[in-house]
Length: 80
Length: 392
View 1: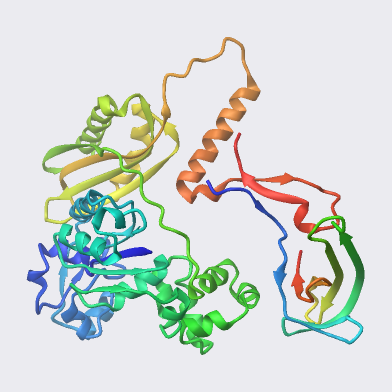
View 2: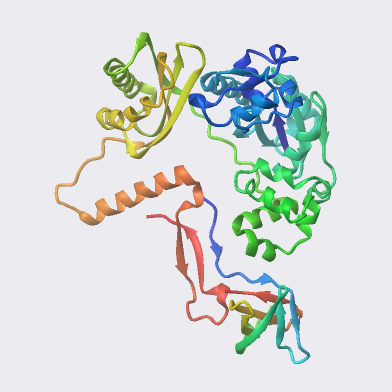
């Protein structure tokens, strides 16, 4: 039996963002609406601090998406 | 490095009694019970455009001289078992994919055969009793791709990265895996011709379009693959009974009951229950028939085994001359002591454990997992829950 594995791991995403950081398109799909945005800062007391700006979005096809911008390395990820 | 052993037209050559008898003949394995797709085809038949999996009518239209051979699954299984044991005889932990295709890791064998991959493959070729295509590569999928293109009696060793080697190869290679085979037609229709083009797409896009099969295809095309899982070698446990001519109906049922009693009486069973068995028959008009049965729960009760196996006898395509029953997979030993008091919870857990074992034997080790809560209130989603193997 294979070992334990985590759920909801972040997957890299191609995000086109406005200068203010708001996503305009995710993996080629245009964003129709921003539902929510929040900041997660954690583990700041360790060697690997975590700083993420999350965005909950609705695509033009009506799909609910959650993406975040890793403020440490600048990359974008999708996460459910 | 992973080695792949490919013996083309294995089933056909066994059914025809050797590769030599196929030379220049347009031959194919006949469909089961007279209808359905044809099996493996010879090179001469392939030259007429006949392919395995083609409807019989279409095959005959393309090649009117096509000869049909009855399938012989018993002989194929025996010949394949001999081949696997030959490879295991050189020390390889072999993972069989289907008759004629197997792979094994070279990592533990180099020290035994002079320290190089080439020498291990030479030893494997010497051990095999029939021409085979051998290739070694960083992954199983890449090794299979190498074995498909290498010439018989030649050996190919892929030294570059799997991704680079696979990049110019056609996506049709994905047909070799059960999960990714249905994707090939769609990918070709979309204009994705090579594995390199497929690997250049984002994995998320393929997952959106094709689901988990798309992720698997992307992994393979990108040079990722699981390591080989060697089979567990056990002493085969089988019983056979020669039948009088044209036995059928109650006599056949009686023969099955005798075989079950004999199999359960074998000391090698060591009190273990049976989880899966194979019923096979050699047919009077040549050829053979084979049918596997996975029991709903591991058992060693002759009457319950008879009830599970009896319906399979209705699938016999012709009268049988020899009936064989073989144990394929064992369960826990019998002889459990029952409790004095009724313990519903214990029974329930035992039944759950049994159901999980059964599911894992049918669908693989990952068939039963448990969602384990770690930090449900965490603001970081990947820290909240994880999947662990289910252990009741």
